[in-house]
Image 1 (tube, rainbow, N blue to C red):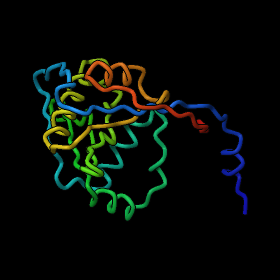
Image 2 (cartoon, rainbow, N blue to C red; image 1 turned 30 degrees about the vertical axis):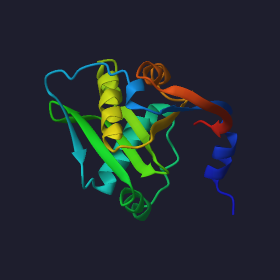
Image 3 (cartoon, rainbow, N blue to C red; image 1 turned 120 degrees about the vertical axis):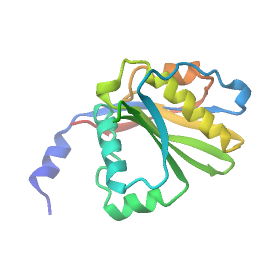
Image 4 (cartoon, rainbow, N blue to C red; image 1 turned 120 degrees about the horizontal axis):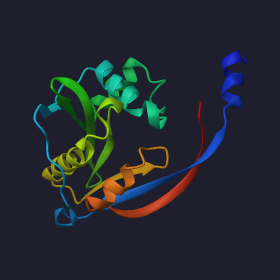
Length: 180
């Protein structure tokens, strides 16, 4: 059965997106940068409520068309969070400002699965420092490699930040997606 919403989704423009895979194979490749300013706090969320994780995913990803998890149910979020993920929350003067998620170790590697800064806190230099901290936390898990992927829908500073921290490109692929 087709709905009006289905018709709307079919009319959304399709675009080609390039996904870039990056990795670091040794802590010696890592080039830290940035520093936390007064009022910045980073802490691991050991028991993150599923709805807060969803909030971070939605709000950080809104500008970059993160949509894969939008239809997830509470059960799917809880199941994901019960897996090998570790989450960190960055706050500025007590307000949520950014987060990162490490996934693993799986197959000897740790993935920086999600990384992002809320729009209100972008442009303040938090991204360099937060990426530095995420890489430090990933290497502290003693993997054989740390990896991530980004795409052309992400913040324009994402790929340059990853490269400046020491990641190297291991591959690219293109895919089609629709945008609202």
